[in-house]
Amino acid sequence: MKPFAYAHPGDVAEAVRDVAAEPNAVFLAGGTNLVDHLKLGIATPDLVVDVRTLTSREVTDLPDGGLRLGAASTNSEVAADRRVRERYPVLAQALLAGATGQLRNMATTGGNPLQRTRCVYFGDVTTPCNKREPGSGCSAVGGYTRYLAVLGVPAALPDPTAPETCIATHPSDMAVALAALDAQVQVLGPAGTRTIPFGELHRLVGDDPSTDTTLEHGELITSIDLPPLPAGTRSSYRKVRDRASYAYALVSVAAVVSGDDVRIALGGVAHKPWRATRAEELLRGRPLTDHAVRAAMDAELAGAQPQPGVGGGNGFKIPLAARTVVATLRELTSEATR
Amino acid sequence: MDAEISLRVDGESHRLTVDTRTTLLDALRERLGNTSPKKGCDHGQCGACTVLLDGQRSLICLALAVAHDGAEITTADGLAPAGELHPVQQAFLEQDAFQCGYCTPGQVCSAVGVLDEVARGWPSHVTEDLTGDVELSDAEVSERMSGNLCRCAAYENITPAVQQAGAR
Ligand SMILES: Cc1cc2nc3c(=O)[nH]c(=O)nc-3n(C[C@H](O)[C@H](O)[C@H](O)COP(=O)(O)OP(=O)(O)OC[C@H]3O[C@@H](n4cnc5c(N)ncnc54)[C@H](O)[C@@H]3O)c2cc1C
Ligand code: SF4
Ligand code: FES
Ligand code: FES
Image 1 (cartoon, rainbow over the protein chains, first blue to last red):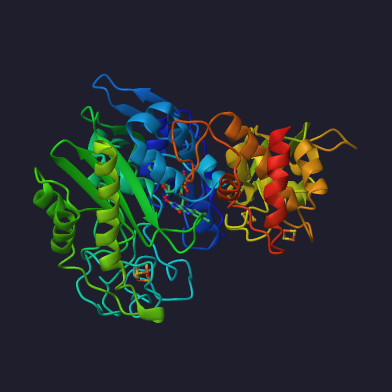
Image 2: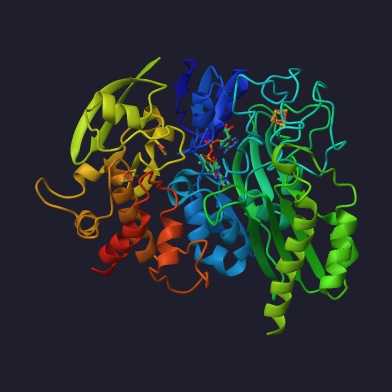
């Protein structure tokens, strides 16, 4: 591990100033992603600014009926919060489907969505990786693609030597639920505060695989707000993985149904949590029959690019994503009429 | 770069100077001579380093010591007064819930955490009703203990041990 200075400032404003003033500085929260990457030599900061005890650890009611999750609230505490369990089951389920009990006790609301978008090659410094080392190429193309993207990628076999190639997925479960809930990210930066709609927090690759989010250097998440949901809203999270417990998602689905409105987000399929806006539009105001949902998902996935690779690649994700959405919505709507 | 920190480990206070890169796991094992938490993977994947950190089961291979100045830590070694066994340790013995024993201190600390989380009504991924009561079924124990790997595969006896301790 490369040596680094450690700072534990007195408040969030000072923490933001510290990071903004040092180009190679990072924030530290629960450390479960950052410390791992420090050890692997992937993260090589000169300064680590600890914010875990500076941002709020509370879950509080908002005047509009929503909930505010302080950035330092842990994944365990949020999943166990009565209001989250009762009003936002999709979020409690997503959190409980992620990592393990010990990791959830450490991982935070601010840190979880900001864990790196990545693949196995990203974690191995001996391999080329555009995300870790811009311009070095992408080792994942045609390699171990089982966990990698099918949406938002330009081709079935993108050019592995091109500097803009990256087919990694964002691995967070929590972020998929937050995308479906239209959460609002409260940020404090060198230029003051701003609110980022959750769907705009993460980036697709575009021409820069090295950047996962739209946060500027020095911008700190202070809380994530859950907007209120109309009465009668149902929501749920379904994760498909290689083991029954303790594995990243191959495909996951967060669904929120309120009256005529359905919101669908997919995990494990793209560089960011993927809102299925095309399918949502096709389904708005229509009965959520298996047939209608399947047709809407086929339209959503029309541009998907199956990635060849060891063990048959990841083309299985395309029908799997469609079927998982059908199953999730079937369960939600049959509960509603039960 | 060095930093001075204080830790309370198994009821004893320590002041020590650590490099900022030192994890709590290395601080305990290498500096304080407490080898109860084990180093399995050193990357948060196996659970061998599980201790109770400020009361919650945590992986200290991913915790920087400087970031936990003033922390209160209980390792498997400090769960019960010298010469006595914690009910979870007693249940592990009675159920023969280990073979080589390398994962055991982490399993035991994790199980203590699980029982506390269940007592507080925390649901898990397999809890049918998110807002209902939790029973220590086989499925619940397996899910909650899934972050503790055992290369000897003593799982069949670990699950009843956790249930036995929970029933007391
Ligand atoms: C073995 C293992 C299995 C896992 N399995 C899963 C899984 O199945 N599903 C899943 O979703 N996750 C999984 N994870 C990932 C885990 O959920 C994340 O590591 C964790 O949520 C990160 O939160 P943290 O608070 O520890 O972040 P840290 O590691 O402290 O920080 C992560 C990043 O966010 C930045 N950051 C932190 N807080 C802020 C803030 N307030 N403002 C701005 N920037 C900030 C840091 O600079 C860093 O870049 C797994 C991790 C491990 C080690
Ligand atoms: S997919 Fe992205 S993260 Fe993985 S090797 Fe390619 S560039 Fe790196
Ligand atoms: S040594 Fe910490 S989890 Fe494996
Ligand atoms: S008893 Fe040997 S690793 Fe678990």
